Length: 170
Ligand SMILES: O=P(O)(O)OC[C@H]1O[C@H](OP(=O)(O)OP(=O)(O)O)[C@H](O)[C@@H]1O
Ligand SMILES: O=c1cc[nH]c(=O)[nH]1
Ligand SMILES: [Mg+2]
Image 1: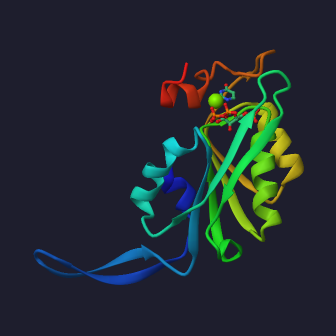
Image 2: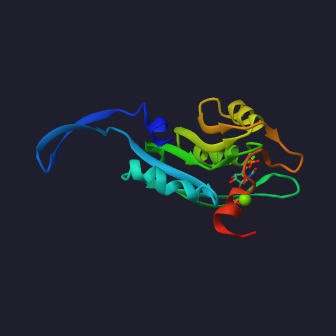
Image 3: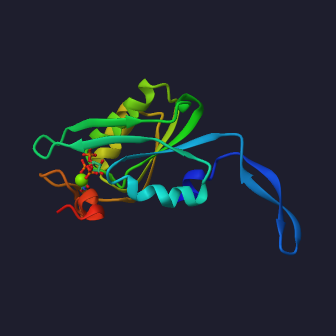
Protein backbone atom coordinates (compact mmCIF):
# COMPACT_ATOMS: atom_id res chain seq x y z
CA UNK A 1 0.00 0.00 0.00
CA UNK A 2 2.87 2.38 0.67
CA UNK A 3 3.96 2.03 -2.96
CA UNK A 4 0.50 3.27 -3.98
CA UNK A 5 0.41 6.21 -1.58
CA UNK A 6 3.89 7.40 -2.62
CA UNK A 7 3.52 6.66 -6.34
CA UNK A 8 3.20 10.31 -7.46
CA UNK A 9 5.98 11.79 -5.31
CA UNK A 10 8.85 13.44 -7.19
CA UNK A 11 12.01 11.36 -7.56
CA UNK A 12 15.65 12.29 -8.06
CA UNK A 13 18.57 10.29 -9.37
CA UNK A 14 21.09 9.32 -6.69
CA UNK A 15 24.32 7.43 -7.04
CA UNK A 16 24.67 4.44 -4.75
CA UNK A 17 27.60 2.15 -4.09
CA UNK A 18 26.77 -1.53 -4.36
CA UNK A 19 29.22 -4.36 -3.51
CA UNK A 20 29.79 -4.56 -7.29
CA UNK A 21 30.26 -0.87 -8.09
CA UNK A 22 28.38 2.39 -8.56
CA UNK A 23 24.76 2.56 -9.70
CA UNK A 24 22.28 5.39 -10.32
CA UNK A 25 18.89 4.84 -8.71
CA UNK A 26 15.74 6.81 -7.88
CA UNK A 27 14.97 8.28 -4.47
CA UNK A 28 12.00 10.30 -3.19
CA UNK A 29 13.18 13.92 -3.21
CA UNK A 30 11.98 17.51 -3.13
CA UNK A 31 9.16 17.03 -0.59
CA UNK A 32 9.29 16.99 3.15
CA UNK A 33 6.96 14.29 4.45
CA UNK A 34 5.28 13.35 7.71
CA UNK A 35 3.25 10.39 8.88
CA UNK A 36 0.39 11.26 11.22
CA UNK A 37 -1.13 8.28 13.05
CA UNK A 38 -4.53 8.78 14.68
CA UNK A 39 -4.05 7.17 18.09
CA UNK A 40 -4.25 4.52 19.08
CA UNK A 41 -4.94 2.21 16.18
CA UNK A 42 -3.01 4.31 13.64
CA UNK A 43 0.21 3.49 15.52
CA UNK A 44 0.06 0.01 14.02
CA UNK A 45 0.68 1.44 10.54
CA UNK A 46 3.62 3.74 11.31
CA UNK A 47 6.48 1.24 11.16
CA UNK A 48 5.31 -0.12 7.82
CA UNK A 49 5.15 3.34 6.26
CA UNK A 50 8.55 4.34 7.67
CA UNK A 51 10.17 1.28 6.13
CA UNK A 52 9.68 2.92 2.74
CA UNK A 53 10.04 6.58 3.73
CA UNK A 54 12.43 6.53 6.72
CA UNK A 55 13.15 10.27 6.49
CA UNK A 56 9.52 11.18 7.25
CA UNK A 57 8.80 12.81 10.61
CA UNK A 58 5.97 11.49 12.78
CA UNK A 59 3.19 13.60 14.33
CA UNK A 60 0.55 12.20 16.67
CA UNK A 61 -3.14 12.99 17.01
CA UNK A 62 -4.99 11.32 19.88
CA UNK A 63 -8.65 10.65 19.26
CA UNK A 64 -11.26 8.37 20.79
CA UNK A 65 -14.83 7.74 19.74
CA UNK A 66 -17.52 8.00 22.40
CA UNK A 67 -19.06 4.51 22.42
CA UNK A 68 -22.62 5.86 22.79
CA UNK A 69 -22.69 8.88 20.49
CA UNK A 70 -19.87 7.71 18.13
CA UNK A 71 -18.59 11.30 18.20
CA UNK A 72 -14.80 11.72 18.24
CA UNK A 73 -12.90 13.48 21.03
CA UNK A 74 -9.42 14.90 20.58
CA UNK A 75 -7.05 14.33 23.52
CA UNK A 76 -3.55 14.86 22.14
CA UNK A 77 -1.82 16.70 19.31
CA UNK A 78 1.96 16.79 18.85
CA UNK A 79 3.25 17.64 15.38
CA UNK A 80 6.57 18.47 13.69
CA UNK A 81 7.12 22.25 14.03
CA UNK A 82 7.27 22.70 10.24
CA UNK A 83 3.99 20.90 9.60
CA UNK A 84 2.90 23.62 7.16
CA UNK A 85 5.79 22.69 4.84
CA UNK A 86 5.21 18.94 4.81
CA UNK A 87 3.06 16.58 2.78
CA UNK A 88 1.19 14.43 5.26
CA UNK A 89 0.06 10.82 5.33
CA UNK A 90 -2.67 10.50 7.96
CA UNK A 91 -2.87 6.83 8.93
CA UNK A 92 -5.66 4.99 10.73
CA UNK A 93 -6.74 1.42 9.96
CA UNK A 94 -10.47 2.20 10.30
CA UNK A 95 -12.65 4.80 8.54
CA UNK A 96 -16.18 4.24 9.88
CA UNK A 97 -18.47 7.29 10.23
CA UNK A 98 -15.58 9.56 9.21
CA UNK A 99 -15.88 11.68 12.36
CA UNK A 100 -12.37 10.91 13.64
CA UNK A 101 -10.71 11.44 10.25
CA UNK A 102 -12.54 14.74 9.72
CA UNK A 103 -11.55 15.99 13.16
CA UNK A 104 -7.92 14.98 12.57
CA UNK A 105 -7.86 16.76 9.19
CA UNK A 106 -9.35 19.88 10.80
CA UNK A 107 -6.73 19.78 13.58
CA UNK A 108 -3.98 19.63 10.96
CA UNK A 109 -5.41 22.36 8.73
CA UNK A 110 -5.89 24.60 11.79
CA UNK A 111 -2.13 24.31 12.41
CA UNK A 112 -1.24 25.26 8.85
CA UNK A 113 -1.03 21.90 7.06
CA UNK A 114 -2.05 22.15 3.41
CA UNK A 115 -1.27 18.89 1.66
CA UNK A 116 -2.45 15.63 3.17
CA UNK A 117 -3.84 12.27 2.21
CA UNK A 118 -5.76 9.81 4.33
CA UNK A 119 -4.56 6.20 4.38
CA UNK A 120 -6.84 3.52 5.87
CA UNK A 121 -7.05 -0.24 5.74
CA UNK A 122 -10.82 -0.73 6.00
CA UNK A 123 -13.33 1.94 4.96
CA UNK A 124 -17.12 2.13 5.18
CA UNK A 125 -18.87 3.93 2.30
CA UNK A 126 -20.51 6.30 4.81
CA UNK A 127 -17.10 7.47 6.10
CA UNK A 128 -15.66 7.94 2.62
CA UNK A 129 -18.65 10.11 1.69
CA UNK A 130 -18.38 12.17 4.87
CA UNK A 131 -14.66 12.92 4.43
CA UNK A 132 -15.12 13.71 0.74
CA UNK A 133 -17.94 16.12 1.63
CA UNK A 134 -15.98 17.99 4.34
CA UNK A 135 -12.51 17.80 2.77
CA UNK A 136 -12.70 17.25 -0.99
CA UNK A 137 -9.02 18.20 -1.25
CA UNK A 138 -7.92 15.14 0.77
CA UNK A 139 -7.47 11.97 -1.26
CA UNK A 140 -8.43 8.75 0.50
CA UNK A 141 -6.50 5.52 0.01
CA UNK A 142 -8.29 2.43 1.34
CA UNK A 143 -7.11 -1.17 1.09
CA UNK A 144 -10.71 -2.41 1.45
CA UNK A 145 -14.08 -0.74 0.91
CA UNK A 146 -16.49 -2.70 3.09
CA UNK A 147 -20.29 -2.92 3.01
CA UNK A 148 -21.67 -0.63 5.70
CA UNK A 149 -21.66 0.54 9.31
CA UNK A 150 -23.67 -1.52 11.81
CA UNK A 151 -26.12 0.17 14.18
CA UNK A 152 -23.49 0.15 16.95
CA UNK A 153 -21.01 1.93 14.72
CA UNK A 154 -18.74 -0.89 13.57
CA UNK A 155 -17.65 -1.47 10.00
CA UNK A 156 -19.22 -4.61 8.53
CA UNK A 157 -17.66 -7.05 7.91
CA UNK A 158 -14.63 -5.01 9.09
CA UNK A 159 -12.44 -6.49 11.77
CA UNK A 160 -13.85 -5.25 15.08
CA UNK A 161 -12.17 -2.62 17.23
CA UNK A 162 -8.73 -2.22 15.66
CA UNK A 163 -7.18 -0.42 18.66
CA UNK A 164 -8.37 -3.01 21.18
CA UNK A 165 -7.24 -5.86 18.96
CA UNK A 166 -3.84 -4.28 18.36
CA UNK A 167 -3.13 -3.57 22.03
CA UNK A 168 -5.09 -6.38 23.73
CA UNK A 169 -7.27 -4.02 25.76
CA UNK A 170 -10.48 -6.05 25.54
O1 LIG B 1 -14.77 6.90 11.51
P1 LIG B 1 -15.12 6.87 12.95
O2 LIG B 1 -16.57 6.52 13.18
O3 LIG B 1 -14.71 8.09 13.69
O4 LIG B 1 -14.35 5.62 13.58
C1 LIG B 1 -13.02 5.34 13.31
C2 LIG B 1 -12.14 5.55 14.51
O5 LIG B 1 -12.47 4.60 15.53
C3 LIG B 1 -11.27 3.91 15.93
O6 LIG B 1 -10.62 4.54 16.99
P2 LIG B 1 -11.15 4.46 18.50
O7 LIG B 1 -12.03 5.62 18.80
O8 LIG B 1 -11.72 3.10 18.75
O9 LIG B 1 -9.83 4.65 19.33
P3 LIG B 1 -8.60 3.65 19.54
O10 LIG B 1 -7.81 3.67 18.27
O11 LIG B 1 -7.87 4.21 20.70
O12 LIG B 1 -9.17 2.29 19.82
C4 LIG B 1 -10.45 3.93 14.67
O13 LIG B 1 -9.10 3.64 14.88
C5 LIG B 1 -10.71 5.31 14.12
O14 LIG B 1 -9.87 6.31 14.67
O1 LIG C 1 -15.32 -1.13 12.96
C1 LIG C 1 -14.72 -0.22 13.56
C2 LIG C 1 -15.22 1.10 13.61
C3 LIG C 1 -14.50 2.04 14.28
N1 LIG C 1 -13.34 1.69 14.88
C4 LIG C 1 -12.86 0.44 14.85
O2 LIG C 1 -11.80 0.16 15.40
N2 LIG C 1 -13.58 -0.49 14.20
MG1 LIG D 1 -10.77 1.53 19.32
